[in-house]
Length: 563
Image (cartoon, rainbow, N blue to C red; front, side, top):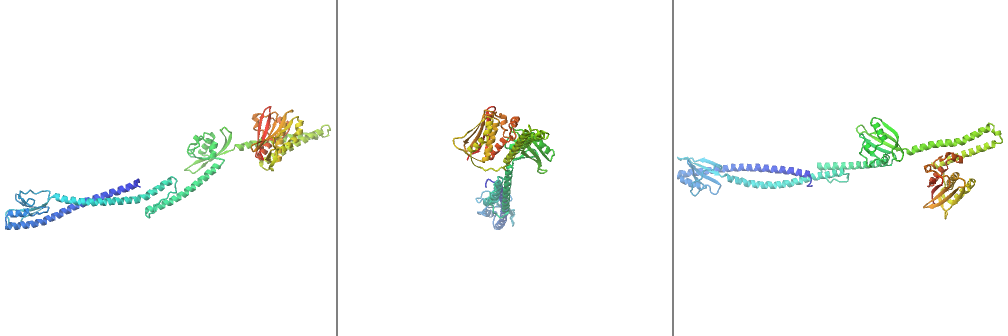
């Protein structure tokens, strides 16, 4: 409380005012008292002079001037009044000198009253009654001291009352100030304890209502801001807002990651300082120069190739304009579009090849070869081969489409790996023998079970083994292995074939991708086998892998969850 500047200002003002009033009171009181004392003394001197004059006149009628002088010497008594008998040549007798010494002359600074002696006297006499100024000043001083003591007591009382008044007035204001400072710091729970019914109490009630209203609105703003932040953080699109000076007002997490800001704290910084990507600044410049909206697509200059789609629009009013930038990572979309175009082109090509052969053989038969007993059956056999290849391609396309879209129904169960491997070896044993390739299995010490669809597992292994047989020369070998690794089972198909160069290994699981297209078509197949393997493994919660070296063979592995 005592540290309050308002408290000391109020106390000082009232103290100075009280001091001035007390000083003015003392000045008026003492001057008035002195005036009244002088007036009263003058009246006493006048009354006493009349009495002394009458007594002296009576003395002069019956006696001599010496008797009158003797009377004057004893006329003053114990009072402070000096009685003098004055003749033509000066004082004759003085009540202050009863010992007969020569009387002193009149004092000009004394308060006096004179009257002439009337009667049958030949010599003019007069009497003078005076009171010394020291006596009056002493009396006034005593009264002034008494008044000063009273004024001092009243002043102390006034200061105490002022202290109490200033305290009562500044305490509520200090409480209100503390509440306001607490609100500035975000504390809306601070309670103002002012309960008076005066104007300050009315102000306190209004302050409490304002505090409650601000607290409620602040909570609403916080909740709204949290919701907005949560929404912006959850967005895959990057959102950056800048003001008219191109300073960043807001950027969500996706926007920070896409633009790879130099510093994490970019709010308030110029956009040019946060990112120097030319496409961003060109789009912002177009909007600043009056374009209602700008939409563009560019390749981000980052280590990992990314394609970003940018949309820039105005926001806010004329007094507070700004620009909001929305970024979308369309890299995967563009990649899928490229894959779709490649897929359509590959499907068209793959379908066109057998259809062209069928058409050519059919046309040859129609033009006369039908009656050529040496070649007609050969041509019909070729037509059947191409029809089978076409059917195989269509079946694989349907199969991979159903797996990719999740429409393929699987019966996930505990499948014994050994029985499925045996089925695969039995189904491809003739193919391996015809190509003079050794097809072997390497089972683990203990039987293993996996969680998968049995037919799906068979498709995975048969495609891997069939692929290995196609690219392994005569005299080579293909081996099926499986072993436990943690909670998973790893199935591997190891061949001693031609191998795959490192630059092609990342793409061999793509649809219709062939390292050597001419050799692949010569060996047959649809180009979808490895893609089907990858998607089936992923559908079972697993993954595929490849290790290979040109001229030393390849190892295709599938990791699936164990039972």
